[in-house]
Length: 132
Image (cartoon, rainbow, N blue to C red; front, side):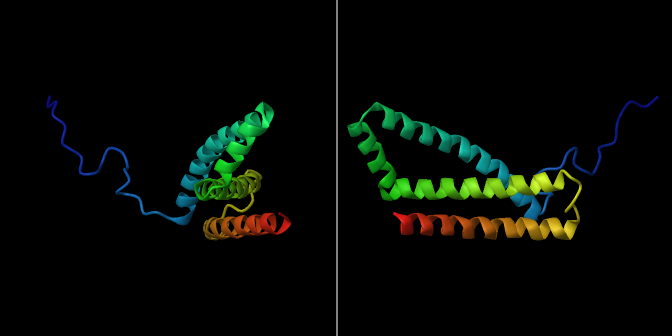
């Protein structure tokens, strides 16, 4: 009996070089990344609340940090991550009902999710500056 195995010409498991990035794949990856970003952002929010409870001087210092250019950029990214993750969650909620599962529709929704999250983020920031 022959115990030798002939090597297979195909890979044992798929890897990144096999896949072609499609909008639904990118949306899924970004949804996971925004979830991690929101986890980090909650630490910033908790820090801001802690500063508010600690005293006026420390609160002013933390507010000054968030009001800096880097702080505003982080808050802008946090706002986008929150809105993008929310839209992805709503999409998943609808798909959990068995609707909106067609390939062309999900691809269109993945693209729309990126556009809508950017536009909604800009709208939130414009309204925030306008009210301020």
